[in-house]
Length: 420
Image (cartoon, rainbow, N blue to C red):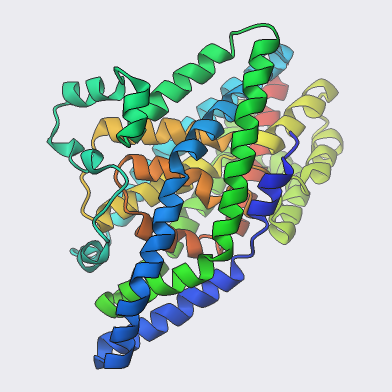
């Protein structure tokens, strides 16, 4: 799948300046917290409005971004099911493995979060600006399941859009995209191009906002650390350790699962996927790993050309098995830190949204732009500040994400090779 130039520009932003800004902001905040330094505390007061202004600018683009992203993702991936039996089976297997990854992350992530100290996020919740994108979503836990289910279906989607009700807008957008996918003739192409243009414009805006990201991250980390001290650093370290553990465990579990479902020995699979894994670790790019994947499948595992030539390029382009794992864990951790009681319906809508969005990621370093996942978190009331702090350090385990994705790509090919 070709990645539009606008998306490449937005995603080429280096995480290093933001990581440096995070470290500087946390250092200044910890000093202010420990010493009560009036200069630093007054600096925080002067800078916070500019940080929240940047956050408001992000919120400004949420609705057009999520609408255009969902529709483009649905329409771009509609051709998979029409690629014959192998293409249809590949798409079905992608979805099954993504769902399995989400379930794995929910249960394993919940167990890991249970080890966090009680009240570890109390200070973090108190620092949030308290103005979430959807105030009514923050009250979702007071609804009955029937009330919540009815709220998903907007009587008037334009009214829902005007009132900032993101979940009903997402629900309508997905239905609209699926219905548009059934339309034949030139009209569908015109609408597709229209939303691709909107998507390109939104990603250009994202690129502009990312230029200011280091300054905003400095302000936010200063604000949090001045209230929390070293507790903020502990939360970020725990997040990295837990996420890396989940990614490594998920990669390890793919080995027995592939051998069982693909009818292949553990040694043969490990030997076949190892060269691609080495490329993935060194480049952090699934696309760069494709030649090694093809070589391992054809020559090391003697797989059928019909499967290799179609499934592996398709998997590298759109199948990102890390997305439901990291997204679900991020949701659970942030909900814990900000004391948000998520309903089952919210978790399901979040997972479905991230599943659809996962097919729009590019196989390049940091290809899963944080801005593309943002609407799914905002839809269930997660404060944007906490999300951005986690995403700032999320580039550190990017190697393990690529390792998991490449291993998953080969797993899909091996399983399908057994039946075609």
